[in-house]
Length: 261
Length: 344
Image 1 (cartoon, rainbow over the protein chains, first blue to last red):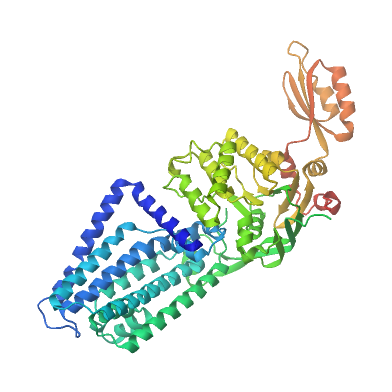
Image 2: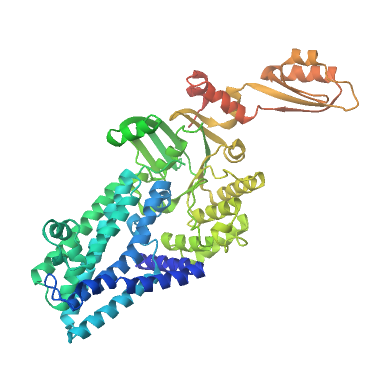
């Protein structure tokens, strides 16, 4: 209960921060909308009016892209801003203040900052789903939506865990800016259905950096083509990822030496 | 029965492993492949005990281990060895009850949210520490009373002066009513008036709440004004623990006599003054000499006899000089002998 309240406070604070600078608020909203629209172009070029690529028609690939947009919104709106701050905290030694607080440090740093405008991505994602299913001619079943939601939760858990691992690395090596960029660019591949990738890439994006789990599985769930075994494996994998990330985080904290005054 | 100590430290040591390389590009490239590490002992076998409500100043040159000690006490750094208890807790476990009973204020780091007014930080801390709304309002009013926050706490932090920011930092750190207060150079960079204000605030706060206070500062005035007891740390080791006056007298047993002469009277007699003690300062109407403690009486009598004295004061040498002398004599048994700092 206390953490729910705390979460609310943190959210309000992020909103206050976003509203602090009016011009910035308006421009970041515009940028969010424009980017979401522009990013459809490569997909249109690759899939529209062609036979299925890797078993994916234009419409079903659009569903994957919808999930990618949504997850990108989650990443840039709720995960990324907070965790990038942690890296600065570690370098400057201001993580001290977080560790002095009588609340879970991982919770505090993970909820420190949100970008409210990224909610636009959610709207764009829903519009893409609507368009794709309109072209397909039938809406997803209620069970498919429920399964897709479960897959979304698994995807967010994995995404968050990977980020925590990146941030935890900062406790040892201090500067991880490039690791952050690397992750961002790898994540970009998640806009394509995973079966488009072959060989080594397929293995890399399924097991090492589970992009398939992040966007392809939820899309398959919504389309009603996800095998139950895969769904269960995804949930288990996401739980393991979350537990692993938590353990690494705790170990990293013990390694914290604080920057000198 | 005596109260249990607020802070108990036994044989505390902290060793850091630091990466080391020679200057220059070649060494920088080499260090990419092969890193050499060396161990630095920041705190070395430190023991001390502080009673509830005590105000203690940590003194020592830069890199002496003061901040490291504070951070171990606050639970931020795990000690390499030794036992530490603060307010009945082992700090490194970071238990909620422990964290709620302490506060750490760092003059060189800030917790205030840069782009938002300090009131936002206050509200956030209220939520984190779970302070009831009415208690929060009352504490804020008290702090406002002592610090005059109202005028500044609504402006964005980045628009505040350093002094205003420090006031708000103090308020943000104290809103949860900590019983043990760690202050790491709280007055650094502040102008004299603001230093005085912060000092007065800390004293009033400690008196009002009975909080235990540990302070490190480079401004000796802070320590003189706030801390009856000082702990001197040098190269991670305890050099002195006891009362400030005793420290000053042990290191510099001399006294300073400052004399002002009447403007219309004769000039000071240099030869006569030099016979009494070491001349620190000598001008047309003013002289400062340093004499051994036991010679003060005689010297004053002779000064009055030989000069037209308008005013005369006897003082201890400035604490800065005492410290300089203390740290210059590293390894000198005089300052560290156990008899200097009798602690019960």
